[in-house]
Amino acid sequence: MSLTVQKHRERIGLPDGSLLVDGERRQARSGRTWTHRHPATQEEIGTFPVAGAEDVDDAVRAARRAFDEGEWPGLPVGRRARLLHRYAESLREHAEELRGLQALDNGVPLSFGTVYAGSVDVAADVFDHHAGWIDKAGGETLPPYQGGDHLAMTLREPIGVVAAILPWNAPFLLFAQKVAPALAAGCTVVLKPSEHATFSVLRMVELLVEAGLPGGALNVVTGTGETTGEALITHPAVDKVSFTGSREVGRRIVEASAPTFKRVSLELGGKSPALVFPDADAGMAGMTAMGMVTLGLSGQACVAHTRALVHRDVYDEFLGAAELIAASVTYGDPFDPGVLSSPLINERQLERVLDLVGRAERDGARLVTGGVRADGELAAGNFVTPAIFADVDNGMEIARQEVFGPVLSVVPFTDEDEAVRLANDTEYGLGAGVFTADAARAFRVARKLRAGTVGINGFQVEPHLPFGGYKQSGLGREGGRSAYEAYTELKSVLLPLTDELM
Ligand code: NAD
Image (tube, rainbow, N blue to C red; front, top):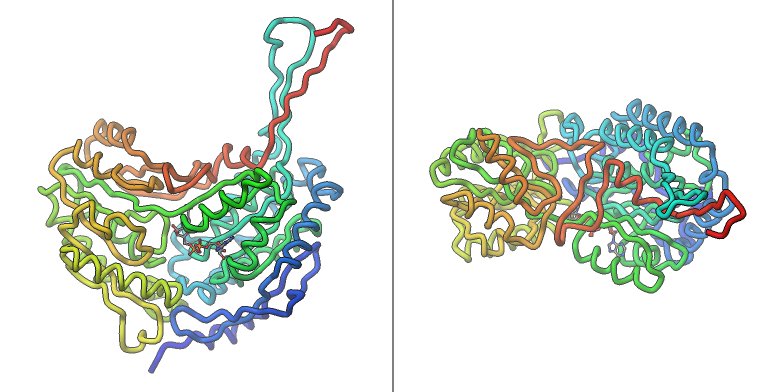
């Protein structure tokens, strides 16, 4: 029998999606829609509008009005903070429902929702965190540089209308990483979820409206990148684009920002290394790296340690542990608590991953396990068995391209300098892991790595730590005070306190 998620869809009673413009739900003016198919079964899950340029224009104008004339930017900070804290609580209360919607969206199993990085809790914590900055991250009053009797001060003001564009792989966290600091800073938002994970995001928006957010402060345009996304990033009334997704679309956003010099923040892809030294617990390192590459998201995680650089002395031990994890991954009905990982998001991604696996074999990398399409009751879904490539040369395509699938490349090294050189020999710079029992080595190596986040003997998402990329992994940071500030402009104000000219 083949797999089905239809019974879950019926139990949840998923309504079709709609746009949210100026507090009103509606369909696209053109009547165009997109039907979402489940990645584990190809069954039709639901339909939502594809917003065209005219709908995007309506949404941006609504956000513009809400910013220029509406109540949100000027709302007393205490009320703004209370609303966002209230929303964080509401998210926690609806966690189970949201996890179910995500399972219908991108096929991520319910079991992954108990891991902090994939949970609704982390999204709620991000809202609490940014709500906490509202009454703290203000400007400064500075002493006049040349003396005199005047005030020199800075004001921190909201940047304006923010276009927030999401990928499909982590809708809870990434919705929060953008919407929380933007609203906290007093901006208004036009949000575009990914066409591959729309329903869970629409419910998160609905809960925010129920929490009391005024109409127009958050507008939603659903649809595809080429139609809806393109209209949003080229709209002249958008002040800032905040994007998480692929490098290619990131480049297009930078290009499209030029005519009006939109502010841009980009969270892009990675090819993050795990450096495993001879004094490390190599078994734990192998399980951690392979776990990040397979469990939950099937390697469709920007920061996964997909490139393991392993000292020759512990190479076999590392590989053995990684193989154990590969063998323990289970696929199937995402609502089954025993299912630990997900399908690839669509057929295009499935073909891409299988193609990269084939090319790596032709390049001479040794396929230890996996790398084939799953069969039996999984045959209709986009499932690829967890793959490990050993004896990879860092120059090979499999060590350089972001695969976004359950594929770990293992590269041997002989000394610390070589490990650091290999780690930094990449166009990306999102994350890295250092596995060692030597604290001095851990810090020495962490400082040399050109990556936005370095985990030492493990990795955790922290809602209050900046997260982002060096090099082609992005521009700017999400999380923490710097993320909140990235939704503000800084204004300098000079005020003479006497009649003397300054
Ligand atoms: P994607 O770039 O294909 O799509 C992301 C979003 O951009 C979607 O909403 C899509 O509709 C939209 N889009 C596509 N073309 C557009 C255009 N021309 N104009 C405006 N919007 C457009 O990425 P994806 O497949 O959804 O996600 C996978 C990528 O995201 C990977 O590269 C992954 O590494 C990256 N990612 C990065 C982070 C991070 O925090 N750094 C987190 C998650 C995912």
